[in-house]
Amino acid sequence: MNKANLIEALKKETGLTKNKATEVVNLMFDKMTEALARGDRVEIRGFCSIYVKEYKGYTGRNPKSGAPSQVPPKKLPFFKCGKELKEKVDPE
Image (cartoon, rainbow, N blue to C red; front, side):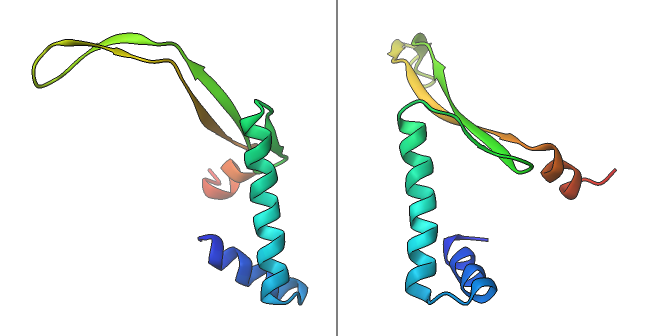
């Protein structure tokens, strides 16, 4: 499922116009993105939690030349699956 499919499903389920459904989906993703950018955690009970993980910088090696290179610290979003989602995907 992609964003367009999500908009279409929202439109069908709620009777919203396509423009309103698009607005709702965009607002939801924008607010989640803003929260993660601030370092907040996004939690949707039963589905997932998303938070920002910080990684320290380190000295790596170029695989081609073997020369050392400095890898800067970075922050990446981390997705953790919720219990109910996990059970739906793999019921065993």
